[in-house]
Length: 77
Image (cartoon, rainbow, N blue to C red; front, side, top):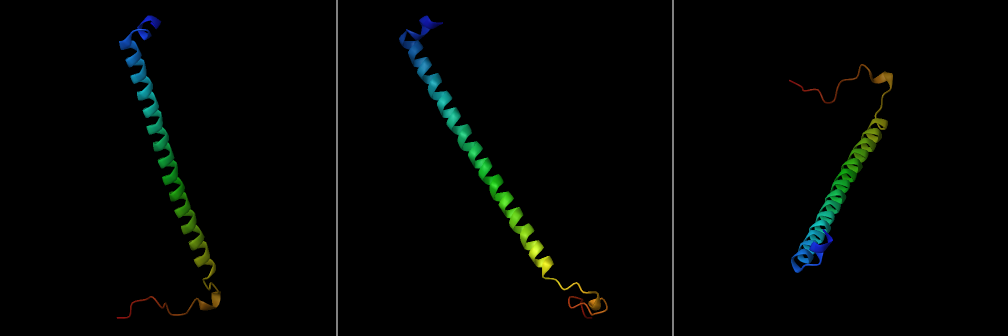
């Protein structure tokens, strides 16, 4: 096995294998970083939407005195 590395063809094969492994590692690292970035963006968006929903829910007037009021969003025919 080691005798193959001492031949010119063996050295080229070893260098080629090393280049392929390095490029494959770089590819998978970039892909993993991109996936993590997309997941972080989705989580940030979900958190922002949740916070907005909580804020808008807190701003509602939910007093029982308004139970019989007309619905302002109701269609008038």
